[in-house]
Length: 169
Image 1: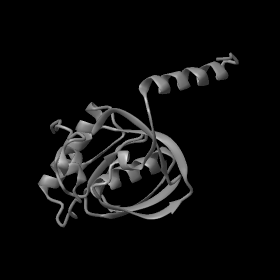
Image 2: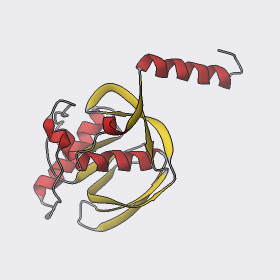
Image 3: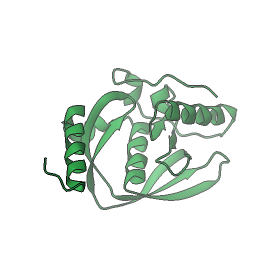
């Protein structure tokens, strides 16, 4: 396994559409392993193959419930809408409010080539949508309704902490 370089916002590969994986071979398995290691090293919750310079429909996600590896993922069901703050490993330090479905169902292949169907709500649904967008050359900055500074985020978090303790800001 190896930590790969994450492509950042200036890299045109992030705007390209990824190709379907036809054969799950050692190269794809190594890609999955490297992507997971890179995601954990970078303290992200998801990573798509184009972010490490590979135009293949491969995604890894871990929102705290264990690693999810998806090959050729597709969203087959969407429900609800929710606006939340997002960031992206390819846009370090940039945050913004993005509207995404509250719940999605995703169909994909696992590393063994078996078809799987997964349901995601809240953060997992958001991660599925964010990473699958990457596979189509769509970036979170394309969907941001309002950019948020780190200072603003920290201020909001302090106000929430004060409210939870019964203090006024």
